[in-house]
Image (cartoon, rainbow, N blue to C red; front, top):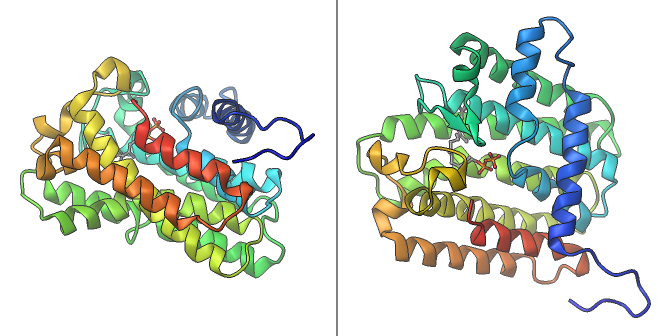
Length: 304
Ligand code: GRG
């Protein structure tokens, strides 16, 4: 993408990513109750679950979509915190013994191991509420109806017709074989719904001409699915040390994945196809979609 003569040099993707991650870390740090605030142990566990770890892919998608829609950074910061809080809650609950039963997350002991199961349950509950607190603490759209619609988008994406529903399908699928469309349906809900909301809410903080939202929606669906295909490939390929979470769990638990259904090579090909589809969806956007384009690359080419 050409840079205008005389214009300030455009940040590299790595610089942009570092900037968004630092911004989001500060905003999360500021939004979450201090660990000195009672009940101290719960607040300590919440901060343990959220701060100082994770790639912050969903917040980056929010900022990238927001930049494509000329959205103010303060609005994007609030949305980014909200989606990351929902994501962090889902990881804490997913790691519980009654779900995926894992002991390592983001390179450190999972919340129920470091604290206890009841605390981990409350961390997830409180984070879900905190997400809606931050999403409703200040106006994020030009009118109240548009803001209410944004709250509705996050609630739907997180609930039984979105992420929580996908988790239910996932739990039900352990030890069973799924067809490719069934697997896709599971991931559209479990992983894709929140990724899609992260993109759409970022765009809703600003303005796009009418076909823009539909194209972004298509982009979001492609990167959401690509994210999961790559997650399956990495689980099969990379080490626990690289991933910061237990590797090889899908096969050990006999879970249907893109790798178990397609094999490694075809799963990688599918991720590549989805990357091309994501790029294709935002053809026609101008330079402002640069970060969306780069994020699709990051999601597919990442090694962790
Ligand atoms: C418990 C309601 C409920 C839902 C859980 C998303 C989810 C549903 C569970 C997470 C389990 C999992 C490993 C899913 C695969 C894709 C995924 C969400 C990976 C983790 O996301 P990353 O890689 O994690 O963005 P970081 O740590 O970088 O934020």
